[in-house]
Amino acid sequence: MSTTLALVLLGIGCAVIAGMGGYAWSLRNEVRRREAFRQDEERRARENGLENLGLVASALVQRQVDVTEGCWRLKVLFELIDPALLERREFRVVAEVYEQTRHLHTHQARQALTPKERFAEDKQRLAVEEANREDVLAAAQAALDFQARYPDSLN
Image 1 (spheres, rainbow, N blue to C red):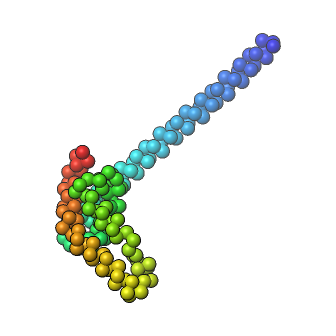
Image 2: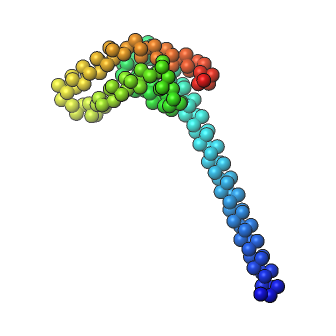
């Protein structure tokens, strides 16, 4: 191989490596940008979730919302803020009520039920609510306390 050919191949190799390095650098910057965007979205979702947590918990404490509906909403908000919250002793009842009532129909599916089926579902729902009402109200008050002390309350 001649020296000229070797230098040309070396130059081509360096150009390819530099091009690939530039492409890798741009990909790395894109990953950083997307990660920052994702973290910002998660932060905003947590902030909105905390705000809504206070509203739902307050509505539950003031008995402006049914126990079942409040538990369904609280469960979603706890999962948004930190899914591990539902494992805490004071919030476990929220997940339990959700599990006991998640099979019940809502909205249009409920409207499609016969009156007898709706009555049977209402009877189930009311039994679950009655059995758990005080614990759910205590969980709602604990959620208000959690919100007031956030982020220290995560520990």
